[in-house]
Image 1 (tube, helix red, strand yellow):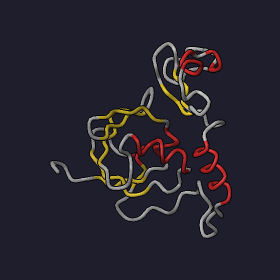
Image 2 (spheres, one colour):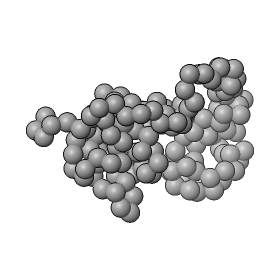
Image 3 (cartoon, helix red, strand yellow):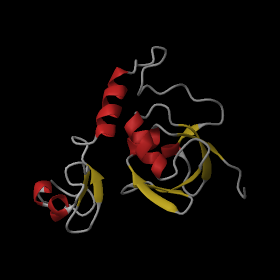
Image 4 (cartoon, helix red, strand yellow):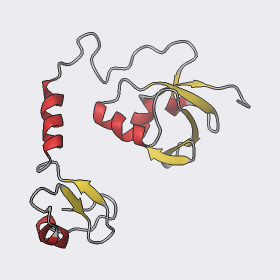
Length: 152
């Protein structure tokens, strides 16, 4: 296994916490021995298995295929087209898949939050609150924002 944070490669079956822990038979957390980053082992987690089965069983919305951008409302623009340094409010992110929405919401990117595009090259960088993120252009193209007047 490769750690998602530090890229250290290790065998999760050889971890000391899994052999010495009294909960090791039910423990679903894998800890990187290099940096301590913890990740849930989805293959052993009951909750992850339940969510995976539930997510597959959900019917897809019929009215609008996911991933297809809707026509822009007046005053909205894709985040990638926002002028550099302009603050905007996120209005819609509904063309992104659920997993990506969940990951972005951890960083405070959700409808109603304020963002600012800081740079486009070599990577797109945005600021949301005190957090700065580098995201791909295709993700920013799917986030629709409403530019805010200067000084708000």
